[in-house]
Image (spheres, helix red, strand yellow):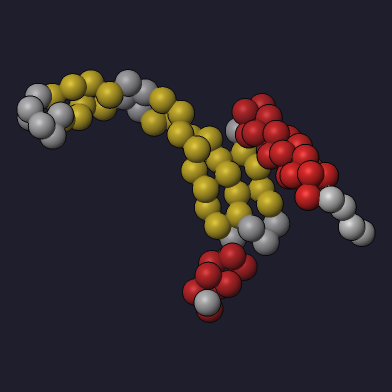
Amino acid sequence: LSCTKDEAFELVQLILEVLKESIVIEGKVKIGGFGSFTVRKKAARIGRNPLTGETVTITSRKVLIFKPSPVLKNRVNQG
């Protein structure tokens, strides 16, 4: 199977769009042998401005977490 550079680029863009939509809709995506992306909620908390020392309230928000698979971890640690 061969394709042009432009076709490969479009295919990768399409895959990334599907991943983004799946994360937004489902809240998680697992890619076998690579890892999983999960959306988690972070509660509101009190933080501190490092320049002024003033305390500020950090609002609650959603964050995207990536957890690599054991296969990926092993590959990274071997190289």
